[in-house]
Length: 178
Image 1 (cartoon, rainbow, N blue to C red):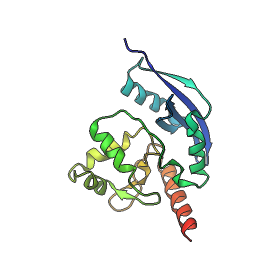
Image 2: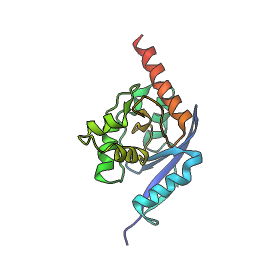
Image 3: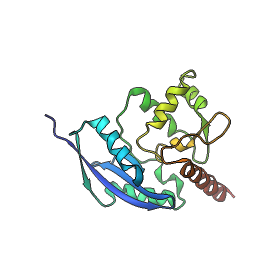
């Protein structure tokens, strides 16, 4: 039986609630979610790594990731641009998640536009499902995907958090370019 992966878990306060992050020992971000959804995040980890495929160890600021996320929330939006992320998932999911990282901060795209960007314009629903299965929200910015009419649609952390994140990015971008 393979040795379980050792992941580090930390929590930090943000303006919109406490955030939980999980990293590996090499400093790759593996998962991010809100404290009240920690159970969902642990279930996702079990799905990807197996019931006994990982162990969580409390750590302070693993790989500097907690500080980097705090920096993002304080208004330095580009702090998260180059964070190393390592996720499991299907090849299609990873393709969608890579495309999410290409959405500029402060911008939004529709699910259909995201499907076109990955060369699969008919896969709008599959793109939506992959977006919803993203284990590294904020850094892999699933909150930047909106409905075809620009409406705010599903976000695992709740629509109010999605609105706050989009407003935060837009406000900081406007201020920095003014």
